[in-house]
Amino acid sequence: MRDDLAVPPARTTTYSQRARQGQALAELISAGPVRRRVSRTAFAVGTASLAVATMGAGAAYIAFAPATDHTVVHCYTAQGTAAQDLGTDTNYQQDADAIAACTTLWRAGILQLGKPQAQPQQGPGPLPQDLPVPALVACTVHGEAAVFPGDPTTCQRLGLPVLEK
Image (tube, rainbow, N blue to C red; front, top):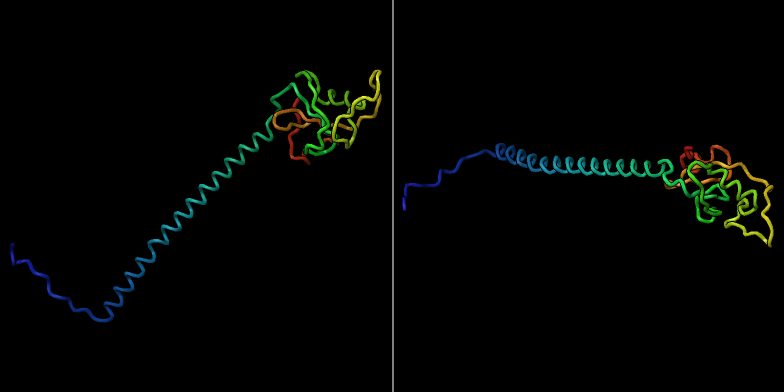
């Protein structure tokens, strides 16, 4: 083993030099994590914003997509999409009008304003064909036609797209 390696002599520093070095070291230590925290926070906020925007766009596409199922129409008896507002479902053909399908049920008295369920015919005989029908509007709910009693602004008030024919 060699003996010529020795520890260098101690340096002499003044109090003010040590204070400046301590202050510089403290600034260096405190500035590091803050920058990291800011960049982590910015990254997290950016990622969360992107996720929310993507999910919002997807939900908007699903909610406002045109009707894709042209075989079923939901006839509502009130201006709402809750289960108690749904009078009944009925079949219709793609080239038929969803409002016409529900109008037939209203004229026959099967659907009545505000009644939560379709009303069965009382007794034998033909269905009436001349009962009053409220103004009806067709919207799209989850890709299917939905007809509500109301004016043309009903779909907008419910946050639904108007059914495209």
